[in-house]
Image 1 (cartoon, rainbow, N blue to C red):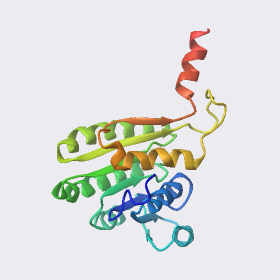
Image 2: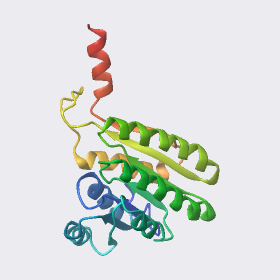
Image 3: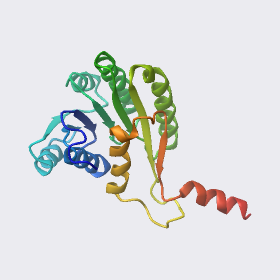
Image 4: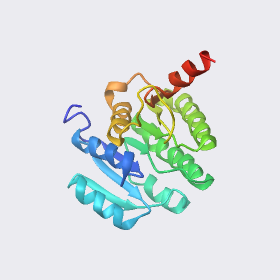
Length: 207
């Protein structure tokens, strides 16, 4: 990625203190973005901010708390929103819904932005967030806002490559969709699953 590709832009990464979220935040800082990472774990957040360097700020926040969601949304101007927090219950999915809705309004006034959602492994939440992503893409597209999602392979799932993707590999897909290089991509799901889908289809065809 170009080291100055996102210079002057601000990105918020929820769940940005560990795993795929942290790896994505690291890539965004390397491309010149000012990155705000959020998490409900204070110690993990401080450690992540120290690792990521001076271009990064940590904000303690939980997507399950709508007050925290409102606080995050007011970190204007937000040019890029990455939702990578683990979705373990309906409250967090609801928090993502309200966060996207709140962040979209100032993005519309400024003429656009990019949002990338990390799909969770829990099937019902995965389907819901994928559907919401498509809805947001259609709703916000005319205003210059792109909304996409990345689907990593759930742990323990068989796939064609025979291994689970590293956090850094999934982060590359997240950062790409957030970048100007994906300027004509919206409403898409980018699978980083080692070919799990084709592996299942191949197995079924041989029965």
